[in-house]
Length: 119
Image (tube, rainbow, N blue to C red):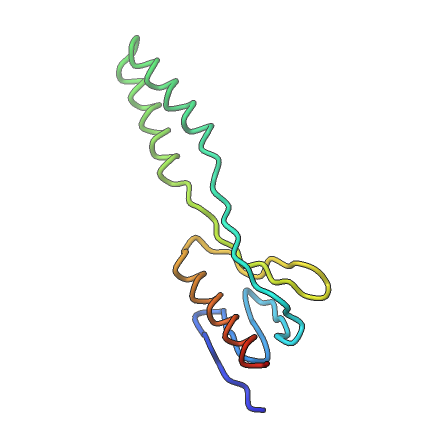
């Protein structure tokens, strides 16, 4: 059977025979299931720092503004991490990590199509 490509972007490629991601190659005949995993960042530290900055603003406006600004920037920079978990006979493996939900969904769709295609 000829190898059919379902998805290819950068260093990620999904075919009916293999899944290549970040220098790792997974044989599709060993993959039993694919599932997404979402890891939201902890925002507790940034919120506490923001609160501290607002309190400091009462006595020293400029210093408090700088602290609050840094806390707001820190909170803004935190992004959700999306991962693909592959279940194989050897267990579950983290196969792909990204900050883009749409990209993750595209790869998962391609992996599911490859599993269905192989029968």
